[in-house]
Amino acid sequence: MVTKKIYWLVYTVLIGMIPIFAKLILFFSINSQGINTILNISDLVSFGLVICVSIMSELLRFELQNDNWKTVSLGIVIIFLVFYGLFFALAYLSEETNLDVNMVSLRIMTIVFVIINFFAGLTIFDRIIKKENNNVF
Picture: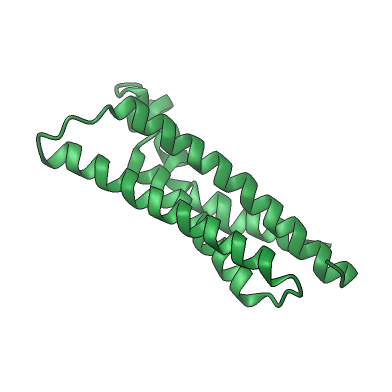
């Protein structure tokens, strides 16, 4: 039986990573560009936004007895959204203005946030699936 988590992994995570996969294919087939083109901050931010939106959608759709957990989870997702907005703004401003941004640090922070966000999504989906199967929280 295909679970909600498998659907999330396939339809959200893999589809959200299409720009990164496409750049990997180009990188290995052309090999004329640097690693920075694969791990583009705007692609990473959009992937993180896709994960956040899917988590928010699932949390808002689901009825929970423990509303505090739902509120805290939504709050954490909103914090991630704010940081993704800041990361994107910094990347955009560094390209369009003379703002001196350390792009390596920004890229690393964005990657770390995406990884944390991904595992938070897995945890939230696990908890929701357990709630649906056991009807306890």
